[in-house]
Length: 241
Image 1 (spheres, rainbow, N blue to C red):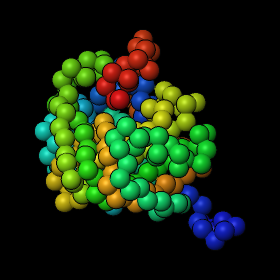
Image 2 (cartoon, helix red, strand yellow; image 1 turned 90 degrees about the vertical axis):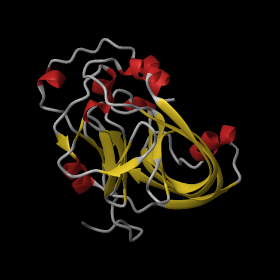
Image 3 (cartoon, helix red, strand yellow; image 1 turned 30 degrees about the vertical axis):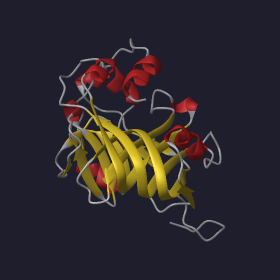
């Protein structure tokens, strides 16, 4: 790989294992393995077949965040219907001090240089408050919007940990959730979940842009015969926000 004009290697793409639209339609099984994800990057988020927990890929290791927030290291043979990953080093580094929960998302978006690129995000440090959620194992074909009724929400106070995730531009809706999509895991890597809210106390924030997106298209009968019938934006607002 050749160096760019500023001496830094060109950044890798973000790999997306399948369009998020398939998950919204209730297709919760695919053939992408955790081993493939780890070959594609060292930082990422997603879920597992049958929505069996939330995923954090951090420093090359994959964790499953269970319905009560407990974290479990996952092997390479486990499969995922939807995940994102990239090889992360970081383009920029900033710090947040004492940001209230209501101001956190705005402060993070202020660091995004362009709304028309995709960015990987890593935030490390201490948080005054974190609210997260996870979901129990689900049946295939149950619409994603129904999951909001079954998810478990849990809270952390005065906790050290890491937030990982991505910013996605609006024109990639259907491929991934527009805006911020973030997951949290504690510093000791024992608990975490899909991030709903956070109040940083003292954290470092690293962003890395992606010059391209690599999109997987599952070769499963469910995906090949899928019809788009759900209101994706409305359904995601119920379960992801």
